[in-house]
Length: 127
Ligand SMILES: [Zn+2]
Image (cartoon, rainbow, N blue to C red; front, side, top):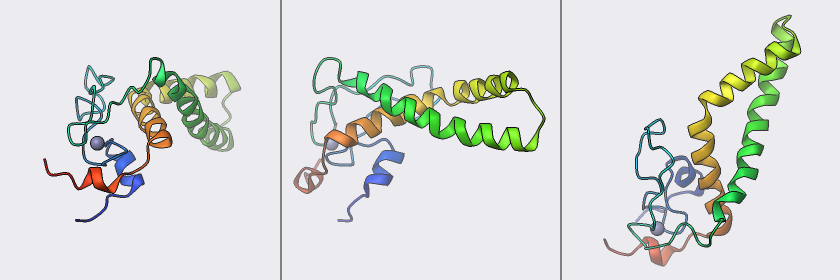
């Protein structure tokens, strides 16, 4: 059986331990309940919220992702247009607002992948 890469596991929002079970209840990033997370992995049984408040740390990842998006956008807009800084800030705000479900999900997935290593035995479990 072919091993799924960590990058693919993150992009497809899969469990970091087996890289097969889904983390979010709904596949659509823009579903009305996009933030709902499964209690545990359907494939290997990993409990996603390992301790109370575990997800607070994902805010740091989300902040980092926001900065990674905002800085190039700001540089591109300020290079191509004559907009004032408050107009550029508003545009960045709108972009981050539109991307909010993606930032929310990928920050949590990255946070999970930081703490949980891939386990080949769990991945090979028959389900
Ligand atoms: Zn799993």
